[in-house]
Image 1 (cartoon, rainbow, N blue to C red):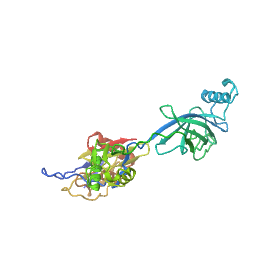
Image 2 (cartoon, rainbow, N blue to C red; image 1 turned 90 degrees about the horizontal axis):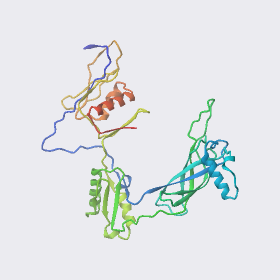
Image 3 (tube, helix red, strand yellow; image 1 turned 135 degrees about the horizontal axis):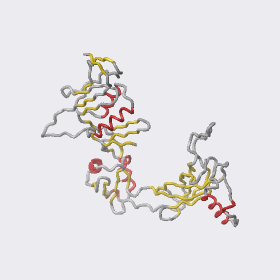
Image 4 (tube, rainbow, N blue to C red; image 1 turned 45 degrees about the vertical axis):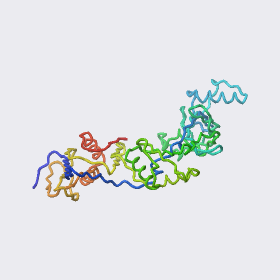
Length: 370
């Protein structure tokens, strides 16, 4: 049968209709991989701490802060005064120096004398930090105590390419000093297992995952060692045989296999047209019209079928629809995207349709736009 199409419409009909017994409800099964406990949780007390400082980068080739930036000029005057040289800040005109913020993450595992990487970021109007050298900069924590001191050559990564318009291919006002900081004060380390318990903190708090972790630990050690304090923390009692080897017990816990649960989620990046979806996402019966595409998806007795060949139509075009796309059970986002790809839908079309489906309340899962 032929139809004359004057307005190009995408008609999408998703019908999931498998009947579920009222007496027995089977849990849904998804393809969540089995991973190690250490990949989804951390030991409570093992964490990083942020440190920062205000420093100067010298040796720049005229790309440092201008006279309008007073921070580096005042800092240089203060530094020279510390060496016994008195110079008025109003008399300094230095384009080879830039004032920067120096930041780093200090883990509890580092000891005095260890090194860590730092990041330097311009706080003035410097054009580039390329080729500069960071002078000795104390790095302090939020409590004001100095935990590390940074110094060394700055790497901005890559290179600068300036064309006729003076453009550049990379970001040159932020760089790194690899291994540039030396730890001067150690962080207070938690005494793991001091109270006879070890707590595992889930990186993605979830009631189901916490319950599974409790089950795995108790089954492996054949004791009721673990209990979930909440959806993000599992307390584990240290067995008597591991009292003198708490680190060994933690190492065994981290290697235990577990199948974590995950929320149904679709992540969209509108700038790049990227769509990433989880296998848990489901779509209810719905009809959507969008743009100049046409595809039909319908249920056929609750049985699944293959995607049929559908074609994009243009104005005043006649097309025979003798084949349809059939989805059985409850369609998921993959079925929807496959159907849209079959008719040549662009990533922008798919994003717009997913947003409309979510707004209609037919997409069961989180829609996250980044």
